[in-house]
Image (cartoon, rainbow, N blue to C red; front, side):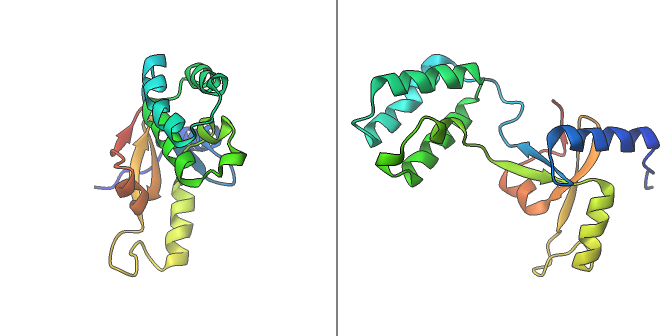
Length: 161
């Protein structure tokens, strides 16, 4: 039995999309709702950055620790930011922002947007036979995400913030 979406649910979904993103659809960080890292965890993770950039000034390292703590960054985001910086940053272009601004997001879509995407695709199947979009709930509001993102980021069927 399929449930219909009430006006209040639509308003809540639209409010969620407006709060979480721009450009007609929402985006959510994969690090959302993870606990903030502790200073000592951040310092430990930064040892790899210092090893990769041996001439990095200690004050820069302390700045990253201070800012990551103040921004309440989860440790996985700090580690992923460090890895991304090591993989992509040219030594002369290093700034703390290379680590602190790293984020990975996935798109969320309203019912109307999901219908439009499926219409343009000719259905909800991909060329390989998989599903194009999957439903999840965010704070009780039903939204759609790309199935590949759901799998890649191991998204649960329900997310509460």
